[in-house]
Length: 195
Image (cartoon, rainbow, N blue to C red):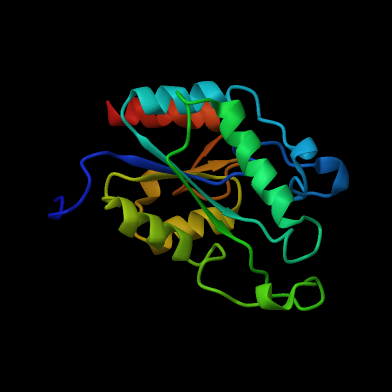
């Protein structure tokens, strides 16, 4: 049952790297873009987001971005990547909001002391999702989450998103979590399940 003050609009939470844009596999298994020149949308991402927007879904990106803490990126790099993502998605497939955690808990990797912390916003901690749920009055019963890491799925579970609404991009790792090959397949699954 929807609580008073909750949005009637369903929302999809999206991880960024590996869901919206390519990982830099030549640099390591989970390496993410460090500058705008590294940023490349995955095929059919724009079409996937457009199909969700046209069906009335809100789209929110929740992403861990420790490259700033590690000294691999500057704040300008981060801002340039965000701007490029918005530009490449275009107005019709635009995300509604973006929540980013810049912290990292490993002192051996962090070069910016104020970003060295075990915070409540770095997934699998639920802080980013909780902030979005509060700001946008999101009903978690109708919310979905698409991620490519177990930490994404765990963050969704911690805010109460149903396992039926958690989609994992990659090989099946759990009988209770549906696996898809990419965001396009995820979007079509969501639309079919919501119809």
